[in-house]
Length: 474
Image 1 (spheres, rainbow, N blue to C red):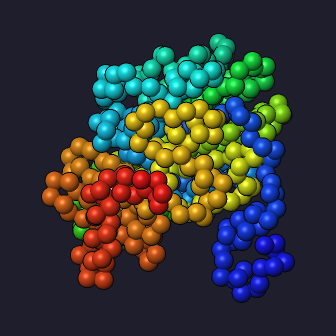
Image 2 (tube, rainbow, N blue to C red; image 1 turned 180 degrees about the vertical axis):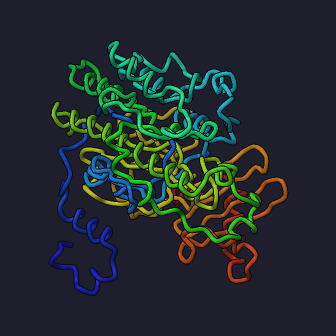
């Protein structure tokens, strides 16, 4: 079928995505680059602690021209979720292909290497199959690094001047400017983008990409912004005057029907002006991370690597900025569990498409090996998304599952329409219908009209991740 054969009625009934895919079927290669090589390079960009709702390409208020550009050249996932909204738990799952209820890694204080002895990490497996594996910046959480994963770890600092700039950038904050409330710190660093910490990481990545390479490579780039402290070069802070920041609108009784019960301590501690300053500074750090991503993307293009390099960009989890009177991460709401997830795969993804299917970051592990024609390791608890990358409207998982451990342990399932949170200690349910309540303000779990939805989603949760697999994948 060609576009001329599609009737007006069909076009009106079909989504823009479906029409694009019909056209693709009739015109192989439309909008795509030459076929993906058998052993493509991979540039894997991790960004810390921010929600996709902030970015321009997701409809948010933050200026993010470089990430927006990547989205326009690849596939953006609108409903992608982390495995757990905590750095260590999220990254451990993605880099081992194992879910939190298997790894038992739920907090930042756990050394996953001692818990998962003998596990093969994603870069380790690439290295085993002939890839050069390079890390610049943060990939695993904190000190829980696995030395056998990398053929080389490139230091973030590349000269004395940069080292001095970094110390200035992350030095102790003082009340006033930059602001400080306990470890919640914010404000400009006084440095140039190039001399601050993430600018150094971007420069090191650019240097690596400009080199000649005898083997295909997996380049892991981990930017620290916008993780606390919310401090970036001055030019990015000037983009977001605090007085123009809109605070989240939340009903006063929003948390009354939830296990949380009341506002986060940060909300009670901060004044209204300080809340605006915090959000303004968080936006500034996102725009700085975007600037750094732009340096990497520009270098890929200038070095002629666009047609043989897969680019994956993701955030390890979200970050709440006063939504539901909550700050930081951990909680199972959209602003905390939903992540940025953008793929550009030469010869496979078409330009500017969006996928609304529930996606899980656990699937990065098997997908990359599938795209690189490497056999899958055993015991992986994810699913290759290759078919979804090629046709984003195809039937996919019934939902994405996210865990929160500790006091009031919760597990959640997110579909295209619903979020269901279940407290494991007593079975307490929170159900939110995004079709009528995108802000997740009203728990409808006990409403008769939602009885069937609550039962169906609870059954999926109780069945585990295998129960959510699409047809034909059991």
